[in-house]
Length: 346
Image 1: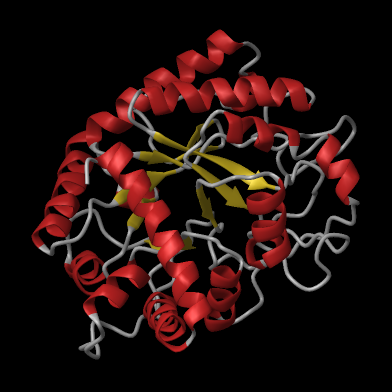
Image 2 (image 1 turned 45 degrees about the vertical axis):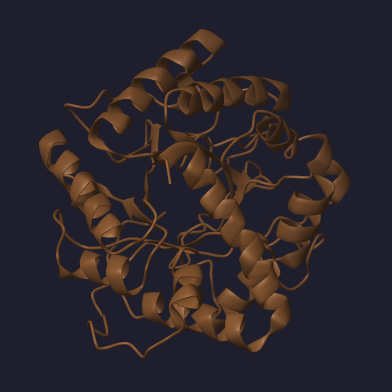
C-alpha cells in the first residue's frame, strides 16, 4: 500500500439524506486512510457521516505511542458516540521493509529473517502486544506469498524464505499468535504474487500462469490460513489472464468469489488492496460494482480524496437499486459484524 497522499478532496459538503440502515451498511464496507495525527474534522466526517467500518494508519499518522493511543481511543469514542460499531484500526506491520511503527516500537527484520516457528511466534507475540497496547486491532500481515527459486520477485524482501509448506507453517504461526493476542490477522496477497516482478503500486503486473500451478504452490499458504481461521485475506492487484481475462484479482468475481469463496470455502473477511494504487485503471464506481459482485467485504481507499465519498454513494446506489446487491450486502455486513463481535465486543 502506497503512502503518497492525495491532496485533492471535495471537502465535507452536506450529504443527502439516505436510509440510515443502508448508509451504515455501505459505510461498514469501507476501510479508509486519512491525513493527520488527531481526531480532526476529516476523521469525524468519515466516522460520523460516511460511517466507515475501519481506518488504516500510515507513518504520517504516527508520532509516538502516547499520540497513537490517544488517536485510537478518540476514534473509537467518536464511533460509539455516533452509534456506530467499533472501528477496525489497521496497520501494515510486517517487519522489515514494511513496518509503519518504528522505534520505540520493536523493529523486526521481517519475514525473510524468520526461519523457525519459535521466531514467528516471537515476532507475532511482541507485535500483537505493542499494537493492542496502543489500540490498533488489525495487522495487514502476514504476507503469505511464495517466491520460487530464481525469481527476482517484488516480494523477495517481504516473503518467508522457502516452499509453500514452509510459508504455510511460519505464516500460520504468526496468524494464530497474533489472533490469540487480540490482533486480527490478514493474509496477503491472494492468489499469490511471489512470481511477479513489477510493483502494483506503479503498474498492473500480469502473471500468465495456469490455475493448476497456482493451486499446487502459491495458493497452498492461503488454504492453510483458512484452516487457521485467519480473520481476513487480502486480494492482489495482479492480472491473471488464465483465471480472468478481464479483471485483476481484486475486482474479479471468479478469483474472489468463485475461487476463494466457493472452491476454497473461505467465509472470513475478504479485502481489496488499496484502490488508489496505480495497478487499478478503472474508475471508482466500476471498482465498487465489481467488488460487490465478487463478494469482497472491505474496500480499501488509503488516501484522502473524492473516491471515498463516491465509493460510499455508489455502494448505497447499488444496495437500493438491485435486490441481488442488497442480498450480497447483507451477507457481507453479517461477516463484518460477526468479526467485530468476536474481537471488538460489539
